[in-house]
Image 1 (cartoon, rainbow, N blue to C red):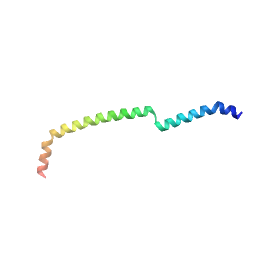
Image 2: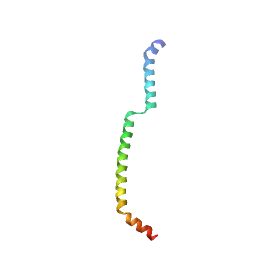
Image 3: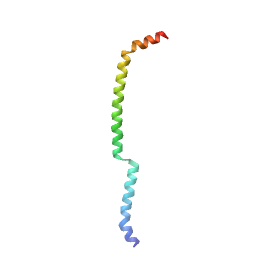
Image 4: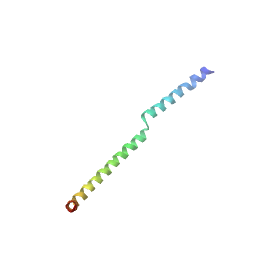
Length: 71
């Protein structure tokens, strides 16, 4: 009976353990894709914010310089 159980269930068990080990080692593919997508979106947003800040800084540069003169 033990031999029958080993031949029927052991290969399935080993395959299941192997797939779990692969998952824990490599991670979830959908999670990796979500992180890459979020990073790409975040970098795009950051670039836009930097552009806005540079434009605002160029427009307000004279006020910054005048504030420095007052000090």
